[in-house]
Image (cartoon, rainbow, N blue to C red):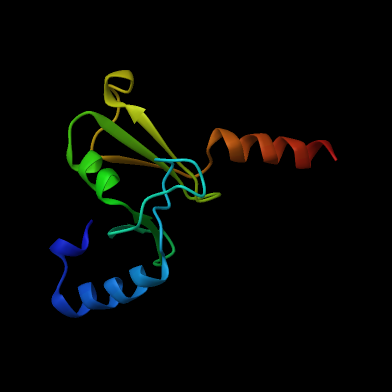
Length: 113
């Protein structure tokens, strides 16, 4: 969901929040050199809350195109771009994961302690 498809009052509130998130929150560039955020991904959660990721113009365009799939982890908030040709099972521009490989590694480390 982008702010373009929201009612004006909600879009204004999101734009104000977006001003506080200065750079893209997705893995489109190394930390420290990520481009400025221009929009947000808003993901509803099962408990009724939401999770947001700030996104740059290039990531926004990739979400709208057919070439890339975005994996988002609710466990740690990380993201990963995947070539859609390598993920024929995926539908839509994003796939939400409750636990990503990075979270799984951390959970295994804690279980070994």
